[in-house]
Image (cartoon, rainbow, N blue to C red; front, side):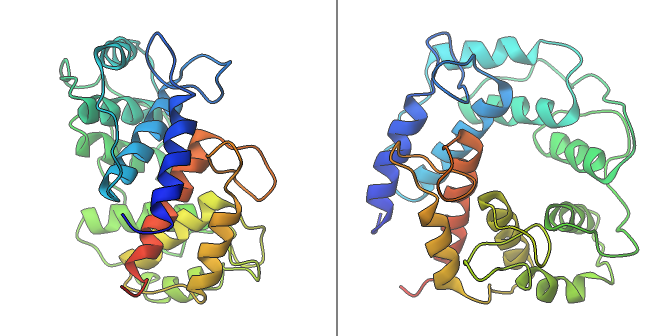
Length: 253
């Protein structure tokens, strides 16, 4: 690891550990019950820290049992089911079999999560991918989803050529990114915008400012908030760590 990763990792590991429930799984706060989403974000964060060189504790039997039990709950939406399937694979819980068919509206987001389910080894009913939208999607998160689906299908949407410039324009004067140009910066938009730029072989307009913005979202609890001065949560922490990992790609050695 290299600075500031050593310091960041120590704080984040404490923050994540404080949200681990005795019965297994992770919760948004120490006082709330564990959820599939928070467990997914916690495990994604630990995975990123491990890739950065941190010593991450291995999963234990209690966590595996909790995830296995949640996988057996019927009626999950595609996004939650993906969170559970990915988490199961991460901790070594075998899938009981193909996921039950997931219906619902045939939207970009639904298609995206069904694609993720297939990647995670859970097969869901419904269209696997999505034809590239005729026009660039209106927010950066949808740009990212559409690009992931287009690449999985071997397609190159016409709007992708101008997507990098549009995403670069989402960076604000505070260094963070909004969901579209001229909107408020949030750490999850930073992560998503950086993922899109990395996919397109582009870089942010101001790398140093982007890093400064993300680091300013760190709290005294060790985790990260969506925006400077707010409370830290597992999802924001996961996005902040992911954003910093991506920024390291463009950082001089």
